[in-house]
Length: 460
Image 1 (cartoon, rainbow, N blue to C red):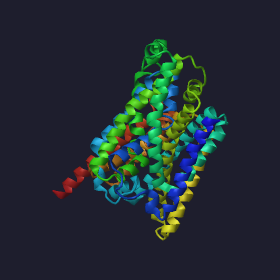
Image 2: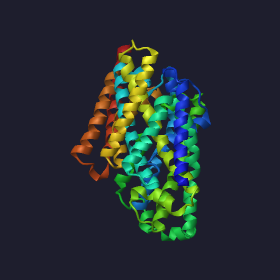
Image 3: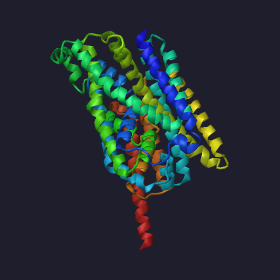
């Protein structure tokens, strides 16, 4: 009973954050948290809280429990991607001082048509990720609170909808700070206690089946490299991350926060994988998807169990809130409002809140129909890296191109991804996101080269 009170108390705090933030949100700028307001540490914390979702925590632990360390090492692709973004792409944000969204950057670089499409694809990607998090929170609350997974999804979605719909990005940033503290302390603490319960590090290590320590235990080398690249590109420069990069106080502070977040993700992925492997060594038998909450219930004392339960909830809610806000802001600011410039600021704010509410409900429905976190994530990624990532990166690097080139690369990337997955069935275990992103890169590079050569000829 005490543990449940801790969890519900934590959820109540999040709701109060949203309601309090809602009183301060008077216009669109308040809802989107526009302005250069975040320093290095705030960006580091909120970026880290945003990417650490159900797939990267309980999903990673489940994969380690079931098939071994391979998935955790493939997730290092995400870490590398964040570090490279901080090093090479973040300085390019200064080229777009008026941009508030991914679509704002794409529109400035390639025109209004591309801006509208960017808003739609950003929305689809973010809504898919929110669906994955809602599926995860349903499983977590099912295991921790004893409710059905659908009721758990309803609880988690309701909390996220309340504080994101009323408080917007400002409430999300405050909630992320709290959630980061919980997840950064809670997951290593869980692993440490689990290792002690297993008789110490040496005993636990000896009880782990050797096959689980082989990165290629459950996949071929091409499939591993494909997953690594999918993780590196799948969420790279996704709307929630770009929103945070655009509100950094300075390019230097933003770059540092981004690289710190990438570095933090490496030990975090190893810790969550270690939780799964330790559960296997302890002989805990349950469904792989619920192995982390089951471990919490079996080895932790009352009170501490509640805190770790809240930490698990915070991991998933922190990713859901950022992507939900990203989906809403992208669709409204890049697709709806440009077509309806006559809307007053109050009407625009009302539109943002309505879209946020409807998107959350749609994501919850997605979680009900596709009960697989990683499958939902890969579907979401197919609307991002094969279509938007390459031209967005080029814009940040200062590479000049045009609307036709961007649209051609977008069609090539998305089409190749869908054909590879749906018609060829992912040959050799390679996901279409990797192939689609490569196709996008080839078409964009070729067309941009021809465009620049043509312009040089005209100039001469």
